[in-house]
Image 1 (cartoon, rainbow, N blue to C red):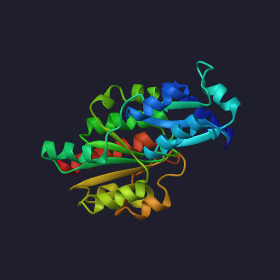
Image 2 (cartoon, helix red, strand yellow):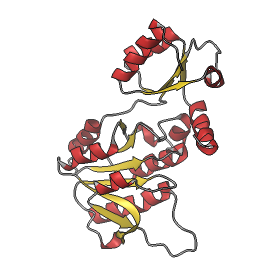
Image 3 (cartoon, rainbow, N blue to C red):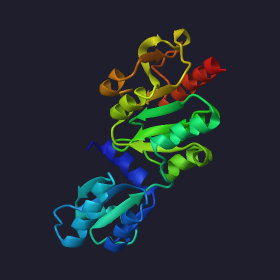
Image 4 (tube, helix red, strand yellow):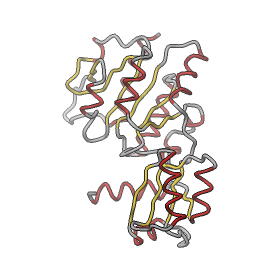
Length: 256
């Protein structure tokens, strides 16, 4: 991991609630508490720790095997017993919850999907936009992306209390499954067709890529359209949350 990425991870984890100690972590997992990531002492093979790892795998929790020094850095108690669970500041919804929300409102689904947004402030800003634009929810991947940290929650300005966020294992697979249910997808791409020339009505998913690379190739291949935002200035592009806002409100305009 590069130093810049490592610092991002440290900052994100520092703002998230931690559960330390074998019994506490195991009970949290068994109770159904949302755990974003489990840190385990690399090479530890004793029974209780392996039980925790098995339970975490059942729930699809991301597991990182790290050194004792790394655990000590993360620990707030220095009594971690070789395991630290990092829990979300808020509970995640399911994709079905998002679709049900649209159904309950009598509206065609409008979802915003984020492909690897790493900055929790960008995530929070997108959730805020999603709420104000009337989107039925936000979908993020489990890996290589910001979660509902305290920083993301704060940046959402309270929107996280009203707009559900679902976390999925595979964004491409989720898109495929949703397409089978009649939702089509447009992704933000600088080389795409101008957004004003696109038909962005109907049941739709808006896909926004990460801060540096944009939408990944595999995810883009599963989208139906690519849409670009007109750029008149000298710099290259908008940041992810600003791009999400511009495209989301073009969808709002066309749906009105």
